[in-house]
Image 1 (cartoon, helix red, strand yellow):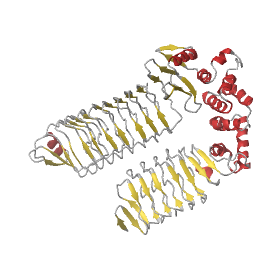
Image 2 (cartoon, helix red, strand yellow):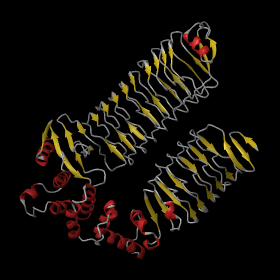
Image 3 (cartoon, one colour):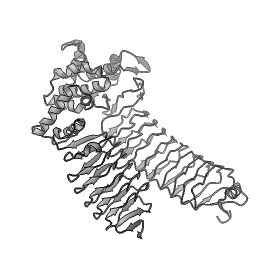
Image 4 (cartoon, rainbow, N blue to C red):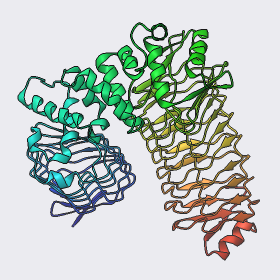
Amino acid sequence: MKNTGDFIIENDVLIKYVGSGSSVTIPHGVREIGQAAFRNCRTLVEVEIPDSVETIGDGAFADCDMLWRIWFPSGLKRLGRDALRNCVDVLTLDLPEGLESIGSHAFDGCVYCFRVWLPESLREIGPAAFSGCTCEIWLHRWIPSMKEALIGHKGILHTEDSPDTIPERFRTAALTGFVREKNTDFNSPRTRSYLEYARLHVEELTDEAFRHPELLQLLCTRGLIPADAVESWLIEAEKRGSKEQKSLLRAYAGAFGTERLVLARKGRREAGDPVLEAKAGRLALMEALADIAGRRFVLDGTPREETLSDLEDWLERHGAVVEPALTEKTDFYVVFPEGNRTVLPEAERSGTVVIDEDGFLRMAGRSYPDTRSVKVPGWLREFPPGACRSHTELCGITLPDGMTRIGAEAFQGCIYMWYFSIAKTVREIGDSAFRRCRMLNSFWCPPCLTRLGAEVFRDCSRLSKIELPDSLTALGDGAFRGCHSLTEIKIPAGITAIGDGTFRDCSNLRKIDLPAGLTAIGRRAFNGCRNLTELTLPDGVLLVGEGAFAGCARLRELRLPSGLGAIGESAFRGCPELTLRAPAGSFAESWAWAHSMKFEPLNLGKD
């Protein structure tokens, strides 16, 4: 056995990785990555595997929850069971040609992976290999073990096989993936076979048909489903609920146009009706959608039941028009004169949408546009709470000057958002506003910002650069919890307390500047900051909370002030190298001796 730097290698097998780096290149010549070699390595962000590796063992990278990029070797033959289990941040998996087998649960829990490419050489894949994943799987040909491998998979399957080759329960998913391909040949026998299979599903009004409106629209567009058939299904769909209605509406409007949709839905009206003609086009579509959803609107602060007429009058006064956006996520857009675009949201909880005269958009529930980037209109002063929550397609957003507040959970769960331009007028950012924005690697704070809410950047695992402004006076509990890539930060003078769990599990935090006016360190404030080596608490600190520095395994020296009067239970548990330093005769000294902690007196004249 030999120890090569951060690697323990025996007979060309990598037994264990013992380093703490975020970017790792495995030495050339290694033939096998052993069982659990990198397991639970939570500092690992990317890894490059040399072409000499033929086998990746069971659980080799399991629970590496920061890992998001892995280069598989061209010579790989076998990927063991649980190999990348719970690697939640991995985005794509391009497996090399030549790979023959994949073990059970290999990618179980890779919840943010959106694409897996399986090579033609693959012969065997274990049960539940993709359990809990919503990824798109690209497969050349169906293999018998694929049926068990897809247990728990919630995504889409792309395959070149004909429907007859694929088991019944997976055909619709495979078909959905197939029709999304850009270069589909609609005249080929294989495509016609797929479309015939889809038509049968639709004619039987199966649940699978309603779950995939793009299939309905494709069949309508190709002339395989006539318009009158869909119109008759609209009535049937009302019995099934809003999801089925939206699927049919989206498919029908995409194939036959919005005006005909209104005629079909509003069967009591006929062509030539002056009321219909007055409301034709975009506003007619809005009427149909509002009617189906049964919503009411609050305009100018007054609840109205006469939904459409009041809304039309209000929009007309503001020079706005409505554009349809029949997607799974948005009902329609409101476009204002300056050309900016925003969503008129679907209020999921209360059924109410509020737009007031001052240009504030309020909502109960959430909505977001079906786009990868969003430009917010200039009149919006407060970005609504939860407005883009869990918008997994959002990559970037720009907030205009004039906006003063970002609501709670506004962008929570936008896991692919990497670009964010914030208005320089924003004063407050609400609780959990950017929680789990895992691609966000830097954040510029406006100079007038006064408050960052609780858990505002929690689990932003790639956030490595942020500069807090001098205007900041409130920093919420858990604000940076789980920001594994954060290495240093300066706390401004206006902050008087580090709240509970503020920097918990910031595993790469090495340097933090604390302000002179600080009075308290909250519970578990620095718990798990295992790369923090030394720290000085300002003279004004009176309290160190329970578990404040627990798990700071590399913390060697902590300098405490003479005025410190309370230290919580287990404040320094899991700090084997720690020496406390404080003035002789202080509370800290007596506490250290009482708890068998290493202590050195602080020479105020020299230290």
